[in-house]
Length: 167
Image 1 (tube, rainbow, N blue to C red):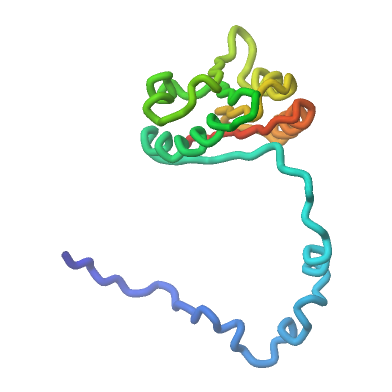
Image 2 (image 1 turned 30 degrees about the vertical axis):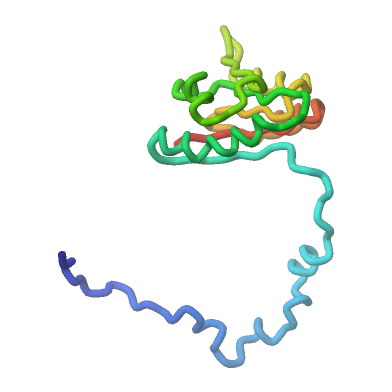
């Protein structure tokens, strides 16, 4: 099959043209004397683990679950005496799916918000209580303020928060 040829609307610049151009003042300065890079290079990495992570998956629900399964499997097989808690998972995350994906269902709690309680409130409470090593939530969209609430609750309960965004 042949595709019709269309004239180029924009001229394409060579990839490394900026680096090969002579007498560019920005290239005359030594790299480590740029103040922004100095701050990054000299500041040590934080020894504190991140307590909040977010994973965004797009595509067919089945494909997204196939990508998510190994992560949840590893988390469910943690030898910690605390739970892996799933808050407001999509309807396709059933007990049968957990079994078929090879997750340790004896170490997993699945919860749905009830009444006027939101998924955010339930996630925050599960993190704060500290009975789960990881609380996986499906909150979409999540605001910066909500993210800070989850970080604070996770630190309080010595837990990890993982938010999954399906799109």
